[in-house]
Length: 71
Image (cartoon, rainbow, N blue to C red; front, side, top):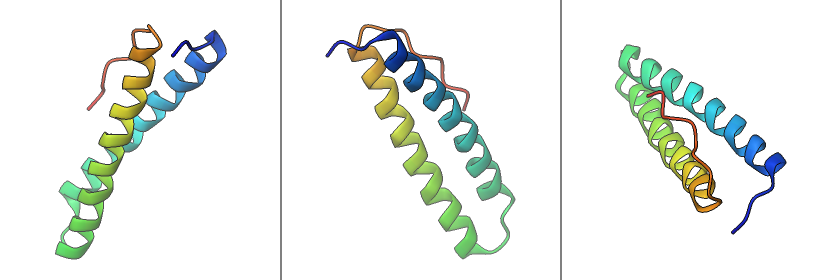
């Protein structure tokens, strides 16, 4: 699959935003005292990691070097 430069830019921006969210959810899970809240943040963290990996994969398939993970 070939990506245009504008598609690449959008995916890179989205990936950077995902990295920020991942770091926040990880921090929230670590700081949560209530076990149910901790579990929710941990689950969302895992989903965000999976989504970031999907975006990274799309960029790699498009022949681009995606931004490095920040988590």
